[in-house]
Length: 507
Image 1: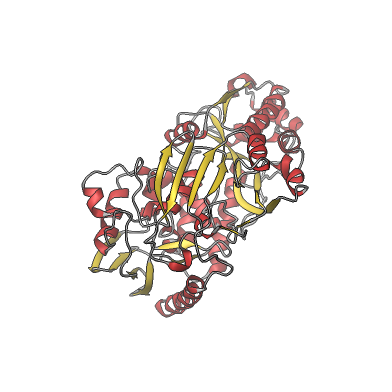
Image 2: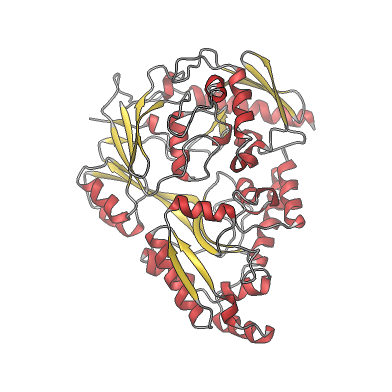
C-alpha cells in the first residue's frame, strides 16, 4: 500500500513541479495598466476560512497562498508555497515551503505561520471540512511542517489548496488583526481600497515570491454589478475590462463585437434548489419526489436562459466521472398528482418559500411557482442578496433556496453537500444519513484505486438522486468576456480561482 502511494506521489510531484516551473510566455517586461473586473455578487467575508462563496475565493487567491493551488487546466493540486514534499507513510506527510516568502507586512513566512493559521481557521465552523483532513500537524523546522491525516485521505492536497488552509502571519493572528478589513497575506496582490457592496481594489505585490506568477498588471479592481445586462454594457463601454459572469442571453452579442473576446466552456458549477430536509414539507422522500416530478426544467431553462442551458436531473455535475442521472425522478406532473392522492397528502401542507438571490434564479422560481400551483402546492418567492442567502442556508433558517456550488472533483462536491459532518456549512439540505456518510468516507479513503473511488461516488450520487434531497437545475457553462487586448491565459472550469495575476495587456 505505502509503495503504491509513494509511486503515485512521486508522479504527482514530477507533474506538479513541471507545471509550477514552466515560465509564462508573451509577458511584458513592465507591469501593464490596471484592470477592472465585473462580478455578480458580493461576499460576506474575504478572510481565509470565513466564507464559502465564489467572490470570497476570487479575493483570497489574490491576497493569500496555500501550500498548494488548483491548476486551472487539469483541476489538480500543484505546489504553491511548497517547494518539496514527501509521504512518510500512508497518513503522514512533510511539506517544505520556499524560503524567503514575504507577507504583505514585510515579515518572512515560516512554519510557525502555517501552524498558527491552521489553528486560527479551525475556530470558524465554515472551515471545518477542509481542516478535517489535518488530524494533527506540527512544525519540523522553520520551513517544514508535518501533517497526519489519521487515515488514507485522497482529499488532502485539494484541502491544502482551499482557502481555509491559506496562510496568514502569526504575529497578526496573535494581535487579533481583522483580515476582513485588511487581508494581509503573501499573495500576488495586496489590498488597496475595499468598499464592500461596491468594489475591492488591489495593487500588485512587489515582493511576491514566485516570479513566474507575479502580477502582470499594476492593479485589479473587482466591481460588484449584480444585474447581468449591466455587466454586458459596462464591458461594451469600457467601464470594465473583464466580465467574469456573462448572462447566457448576451453571449451572441459578445461574439459579434470585434473588441471583445469570449470564453465559453463547460463548467463545474451546479445550480440547485436546496430543500431543507428537516422541515415537514421535505422530510420524506415521497414529498420531495412529488415536488420534483411537478417541475418542468425545460421550461425553467427557456424562461431564464432562453434555452441556452441544458437542465439536469442529477444531484452532481455530469461532467465528473461517476456522476449519473440513474434514480432521478422524471418530469411527471400527472404522476406527482397521483402520488399526492395515493398518500392522502393535502398539497397546501407542502407549500414553501423560495429564496432567489439573482435575477435568473428568480425567473426559475417563478416557473416552479406556476408548476406547483397546478397541483395545489403554494410557493412564494423572496429576493435576498447572495451573502444573506448563504447565511440563511448555512444556518438552516430557510425552506428552499437557489444556489450554485462548484468543486474541482466529484468527491469534493459530494463530501461537502451530503456528508453529515458538514451540516451548518455546505450540507445545506441538512442530510444526516449514515449510509451516505459511509459511501463518501469509503471514497475519501481510496487514495490509489481510482475506479473503486469512482464507484463509491456513483453509488452516492444514485442514492441522492433516488432520495431527491434537492432539485437539480443545471450545470453552468463558464461564460466570460473581456477586452480583446486583454490576455487571459488561465481559465478554470470551476469558476474559481481566477488567477488574475496571470492576466496581462497585449497592447
